Image 1 (spheres, rainbow, N blue to C red):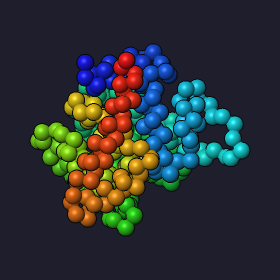
Image 2 (image 1 turned 60 degrees about the horizontal axis):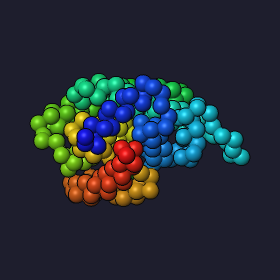
Image 3 (image 1 turned 180 degrees about the horizontal axis):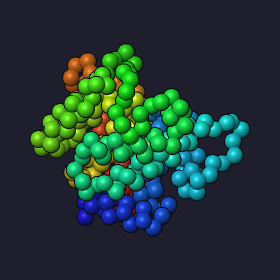
Length: 241
């Protein structure tokens, strides 16, 4: 049995049983912690695990930011949505549903008038880089998916898809997290060892994305994905024993 066959089988069984001790729980918590941490979340791995396992947070001398907690819960829901839609081909509707699960419970985003589960209504930037204007997002996303559907899927193609997606930046906020969930999903579907970008590699990740935007070079991102595959596959082997 391949790692991916094992993962798909165990994810579904453990999710349905609300099992908090296996590979499903490890993966959902690990993705949620690291993906949110990359975006500035203040929650620790232990706090993330407590929130996932029993819906509570341990006592702390510091205040918890409501948005961090809301987005962490949203990420858990997004992971479940990813599993529920795994048999379907990737579509704009699926990507929007990921964003909805991630963001629908975030009070701050709703009060700011951000589009939830829909493409952005306001122009936004990645640091100094301009992204696709809101009125052009639907067409650019359609072009991206049409390009993707005509590829022989490999890790390098997934790296290029991820970089293109993030360059479009289709949502008002949450593009990195939805993009990394799509990446994990498409690895899983295409029998490619999944990639989870860890916060420890945040700088490598940002530099690789910058390299793509400046030089159209996907090699740095692909190499990072290979590094992350090795880490995650070792964790999977532990649960496969």
